[in-house]
Structure formats: structure tokens, C-alpha cells
Amino acid sequence: MLKGAEIILVPNDCSSMLPRVQALSTRAYENMVGVAMANPTGKNSGCSCAYSPICWDRNGLCVDNTLLIADEITEGLFYADFDLAELRDYRKLEMLGNTFRKVNAYSDLLNGEIKEPFIR
Image (cartoon, rainbow, N blue to C red; front, top):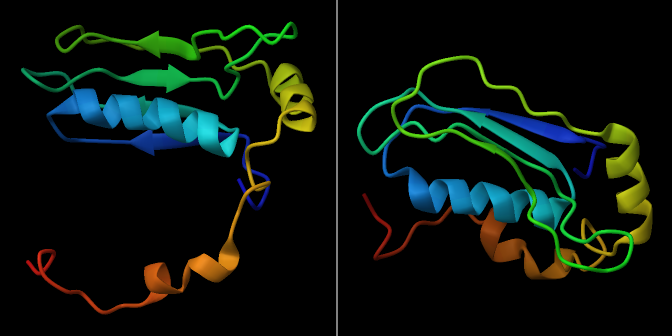
């Protein structure tokens, strides 16, 4: 997003998809980018999806940003239509993206030290 990405494509191969799918919707919203994820089918897998960053219409009413969400077992090619003109207009009006970045608070994220309970 910081370098101008408008859509992020996520090739994936994992299970336990519900929290991951919800996180992708949130990442689209927070970063004001479209997100599309492809995942192989299977029990507790599948759920290929696409999310728009647009969560409010022009009247300020909340809208569902889900463009596509597949089930666990259906195989196929799935299409999601991202309206880039609408996305660009939305970015000009909304204040997420990089508006509230606090770069001075990120030093701990850049530190390579790993402490309990995250040592593997």
C-alpha cells in the first residue's frame, strides 16, 4: 500500500481458514487495498476469497466489502471484479491507509530478537 499497491494477491495453502479469511477482510479495509486469496479445496480449507477496501458508500453507510468467498469443497475458477476507479476515489476521501501510521512506535517490530512465548 505504501508503494502504491491497489490489489494484493495472496497465493495460499493452509487450513483453518475462518480466522485467516476474516483477517484478509480487515487488511483490505485497514490498508485501503483490494485483497484476493486463492486456497486449495479440502475439509477446513478452501474459502478462496476477495475483499474490496470500500466499507462505506458515498452516503456514509456501511457496506459489506466481500466480493467473493468460496466454500471449502467447490473447485473452479472464481472471479472478483475490483473497480479500480472507485477504489482510487475512495482512497482520496477516506482516512485509513497511512494516515495514522506511527513509525516511531515500530522499532520493536523491526527488532529481530525473539522472546518467550514465541520461541519455536
